[in-house]
Length: 480
Image (cartoon, rainbow, N blue to C red; front, side, top):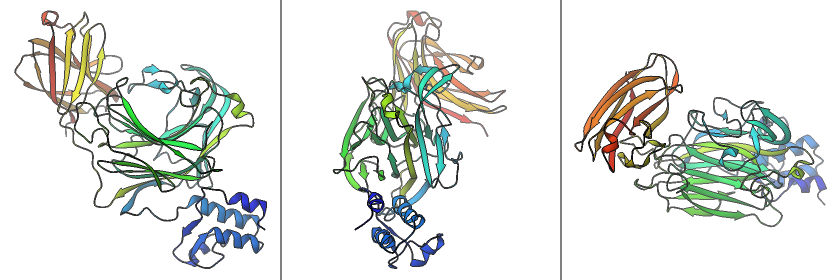
């Protein structure tokens, strides 16, 4: 009879076979693993090792090998593009960044809402993750945490992303992970657009590879968000339910295969969801999922997904201590001969800012249209924005665009830093005939600059009545 320890190792959902090139491959380890000598390390080797009296170190190494290595590389012509195996003893900061705090901020770091838009209760820190034994661990803790700006919190955790360091368009994204269970825990493996070329969330899309409910660890879901800017967005989702006795507490491989016209979700290579009916308003299919997306790993606490009353964390979950979300690896594959590339944008999409005016902005393929019923009293009461353009001291950038208005009026075009200092300040007159404009702007310091198309109460605009302003072929490029 197998020992209780060995039975515990043979958990449902574990990967029990890993092909090695030859029996000699196991000799690279400090202890042998291929006990049957067949060139494959699998559950039979674990049983054989136990029956032959292998010590705890040998059993543990075979277990770790089985839990951490997939049976094979993905088929269908996928080739490895990027990965993190979490070897070593610290996070590779060339691949990952910490996203900190509890507040959701805009591209300039300005407050939008608390709780990351979901009533989440944790404060994300750079102290709640560790790398050891080939595994990244994100730890959620019930502890007091105070921040001079964002206030005091009772829970901490970590959120990591590859933004500005790695992103991909299409392919296979595969993550092997496990997570402790408990009410109000919310593990997530997901993706956001590197550049929101179709507008703010969720017009530019969101891909959720795996989200789990701590209170019901026997299931997870895979989701895409798309459509239009909140609150006019929508989503498609499906659940995966584990077999009896299995759950997210055990190691599983969560993956998506992302083609031009279809996205597929898998758990341990079992297909459970296929989606293809997405859109981004005013843009051609397959927008928004035709752009580069980056990877996010986090463990939230409380909030609308699994919090008490959709808000509160359950302190009882942490009665025995911190809770862990463990990630063995993240691997991204391209599909050979069918790799996707982002759809080129003929015109940059704009964010909008409306204050005291009656106006709305619609981004379309090739242009952005500001519909104005009333300009209000402020010059900046209606604006189209290119937010958070990273520039450096001494650089000269060129802003070019075409513009027309159904009513003759003026528009102010600026490039500003966070203190509203203007490095570009031009007033242009618009008519029903499209005109081309091009301006160079040089920056004296490193900064995050905002380009603004101001369409409020400027010149005779108050008497223009209802009108539309169309901005097309918007480009922001650095001069050589």
